[in-house]
Length: 133
Image (cartoon, rainbow, N blue to C red; front, side):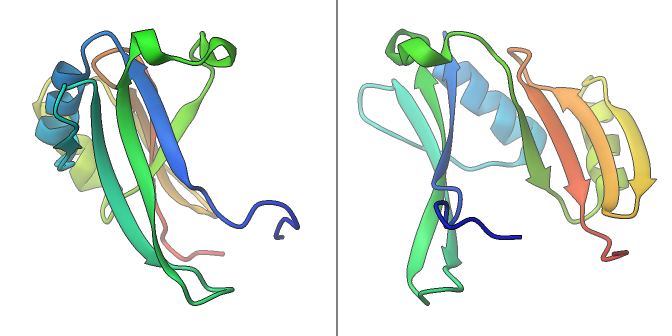
């Protein structure tokens, strides 16, 4: 099902008291590579894709922003970020080896799932699309 208003996800924005430490956690635990703006208040990763509807090459941005810049409407953590992974078992084992508590891996018709939290308690869902549906 598609939306007549939303064409895709433009970005994910996480707010942190220590963006550098959280970016380092994601680098160490999930191998995310970040760029930073010069003052160190924002660390971001870009994920390129081609929009199916328009054929336009674009990016989805994932960023860690300093908490003081958090919008007033986003003061609480009420979300989970779902990350597509190549191998849920391997990723879960890697995280566990780094001391991260991981729940799952569970298999559903949509694929394999596992759950954990990052350094600051942000909810993470790992998803291996097994093509079962």
